[in-house]
Amino acid sequence: MTVELLLDDEWFAVCDRDRLTPGRGIAALLPDGRQAALFADRHGRLYAVDNRDPFTGAYVLSRGLLGSVGGRAYVASPLLKQRFDLASGECLDDGEVSVAAFAVRAR
Image 1 (cartoon, rainbow, N blue to C red):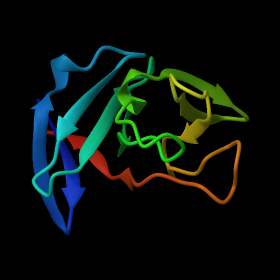
Image 2 (cartoon, rainbow, N blue to C red):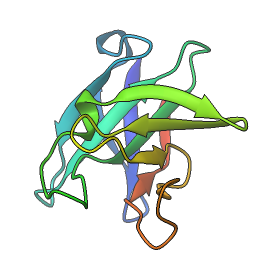
Image 3 (cartoon, one colour):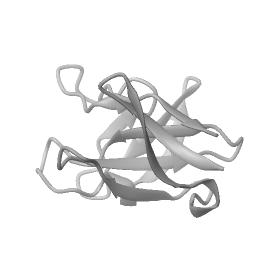
């Protein structure tokens, strides 16, 4: 199985599904030069958000810790610990900040 992200109305192959370990992230370089942080949760759901932490500018969200609050899965930045909703990219600690969230599938 291959993990794919939806970019500009086209699916882009990122990695093999078996590269994703539940609860841990990986970073992927996208064709436009951006980086995505990909995750699989313990239930097998896949998520992808921008890898750049908007608070520090560092490309580290793929190294963050996964968790959930109120039924919302999030990744906490390993630097300043802000939490980003994995489905929407919204920062759970500052409603004015967000990261891009990507549609993701495995085929």
